[in-house]
Image (cartoon, rainbow, N blue to C red; front, side, top):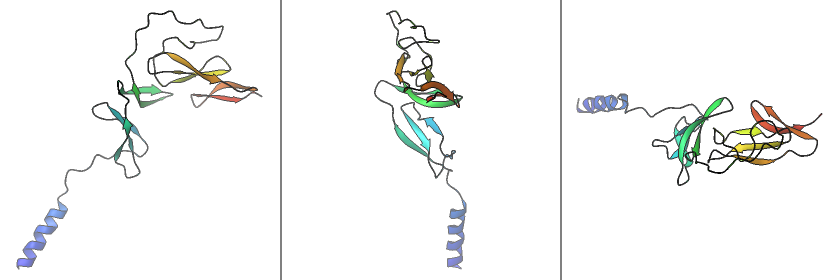
Length: 146
């Protein structure tokens, strides 16, 4: 009888779950709480730290090519200087203010630019000869010119 009581208590303890771990969808990202880093959902559906944000930055969820993703960003800097001219290329040019840090765009037909953590466009590079900048699934790439 003594053993049955112990067995009954043990089975009750095993059947009573502890607070369930926070589950997530594999491959998704989020900002840590507080916004000091970025986490990813691992293959066990558990949040795992990718890494902390660099000093002076914080994690913010930003739109990126149709998705919302976490980025370590600075607060927009105030600029007192004049922006560079467009040099005849359509759209904004490097040196101009931009809204979404981490967002890549075509800079005219033959180059790619990115919005940096200071909300300023920076030229990433020119496309190789016989190629041009075009969007594939909303992301700019240098593709072969046909």
